[in-house]
Image (cartoon, rainbow, N blue to C red):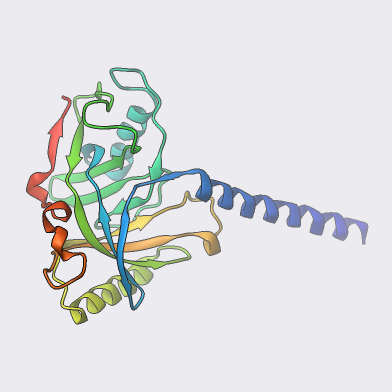
Length: 229
């Protein structure tokens, strides 16, 4: 009985530490700034300001991630360590990373990006020393988002993506580009504490209360500009 009691105490301690870790990381990791414009039927309309990203294209996700991780770990012109932010944003195949990263797969390989903390501007972001890594300015944009918990399996992501697009269609909001998966937690966070979102950029309408700020809310892929290399 003593052995069983010690085992139960040990398991309970590990469970408490696991939950505590998930809560701590979720509360202390900086998130990309945004403004909520509207909520309806489980969907949030959100505006992002101009953001600075560090980006690379590689043959696979692991190689791309390692390049970007080296950059934020000091492989830059200022030898500066850079804090990670959330969420993890994924296009195409879903990935599970410990850092904020956006990934897009195409015929040329995998393009992966880390969002830099809000304290960095195009003028102050450290210059990469790896020529395969570049800094990019992403213009302001408006998106539709649907949140869900637990692990972001392919089936679960597909269901949430379909629900997001159906809801936006009913609201007569036009989308632009493909939906992406946003992940806010590291792999060690308990599944019931995890936060995931499916996000898609939308065209800003004139008939919504927030539509009169169109010029401040819209940017397209052509506006994304590299700098600092």
